[in-house]
Length: 362
Image (tube, rainbow, N blue to C red; front, side, top):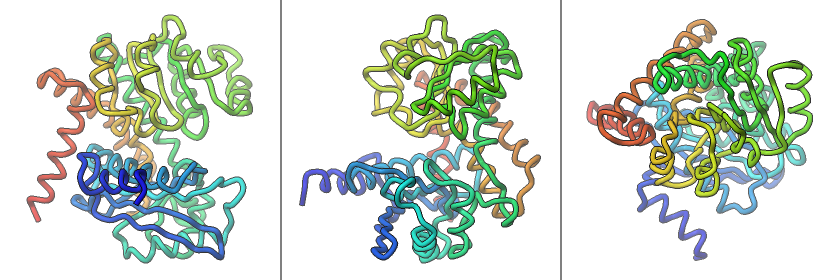
């Protein structure tokens, strides 16, 4: 057994980051599908989480990502007040090269084989049109198009929830939820980030953006000739002078031993999952006086939307639920202050309490 494989198994069975109920390795050689479905918890109900399609360097890296993301979904769904546990799937490969209808249909059959223990949706590398294909083989599919009975693009409410988290952070730190005149840096202006820019500009915030894709940056600058500027990369963005809020909206691990010491922002509040690169980063942020709005709390608008799809989608009902992210974030900051712990630890405690109570009620 390789050291990497042993590390994954140790995470699964022995570490505090493990405890998953089920991990399924899926392969369909005819279509080229290689996928991992991780179910962390069904204490609150069927596991719900998106499908990430990404060119991982190794299969072991894909498994590790699925485990981390699934665990995060358990906490996210618990804090969002949903009757769902946490799960996540990853498809290994470059979606621009290998994504086909046959591959997505094969993936749908694997999800269906779990009999409803896992409900899938969109994530990085997958879109509404993809979920429409998956749904042809699997009724436990959300994030579908309105034409196919779905809710459509979940990034709309994801961005709205992050915006509410920013407002709560401003209220807690500066005594006023208004973001007018605040300087906000957004790393990643794709599916969620570009909607977030719209909310911020509508309120009068100054926005600084960066993205690895020049076309994404160009689209934002064309839509906002004033009030938005771009910088070359994230390393530049986190060092921007007088930055009030930093919003990581791309892949995880944005807050690490290299970035935290040089952050100029007073608040971190973004849409990316798993922003803390390792345990202890939340304390490093607190020690620097940087307020961290836990990622899985503020980015829950999307999962609120796709969960509602299972019961007959109503956008205004979902938006009202997503607006409560403001109150939830404030409650976490209050709990953190009372318990003398970082906000990330406070959010974990609240989520774990809800899951433990659900298990105890069975």
